[in-house]
Length: 239
Image 1 (cartoon, rainbow, N blue to C red):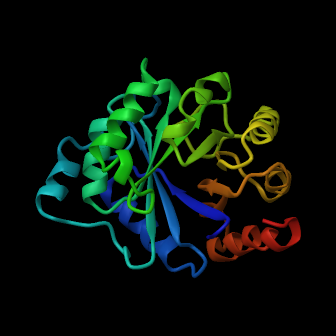
Image 2: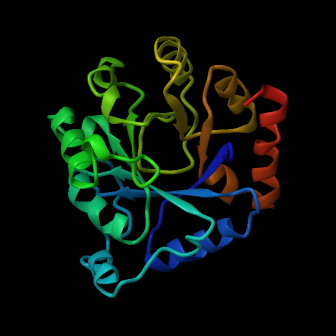
Image 3: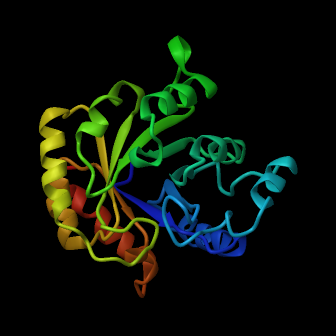
């Protein structure tokens, strides 16, 4: 599994397709995260919320996300209707869903419902659909504690304001990761937002196994070379 998961925050379907094509050309990329922002839970609004019904139309036409033979897709649901929206993305071929702990008043019900809807229970297989839970920088770790049996991984947000790429890294996430990993070393951790080569080293040392990187790759002169710089940290820091 790659250390780096490139993140796409699409402004339109064309923008999504262009960035997916760029990332798919990088040999070490085997997973891409698509950020979905509804403009209510987080802002500003991203596609497909900016174009009403386009996502549903894609599903009805039987379309699929590109490069499914080698790319796995993770959908970061920064929205209040994540359970409903997830259905469309799964139909397009996504296999990983990230729900935000703060996006619902009944987190246990949400996770129980999605696991049941998408093959949960005794026959559930995380190789078909896996669930992650994201936690904002200001939120208490206690939000996660009640739901650990329903998720496969935790995503800590590394920025203060979610839903917008290019923000500065918030170092408060270091302590959150340290505490959580000391309590639950068996749970996979990823951090999303503000990732650089420098702070990545400390995150890896604290137990983070996946770095979700958006603007840090897209704004590089050579995105492929930038990804490989991150991937090289696996050898140096023992991922």
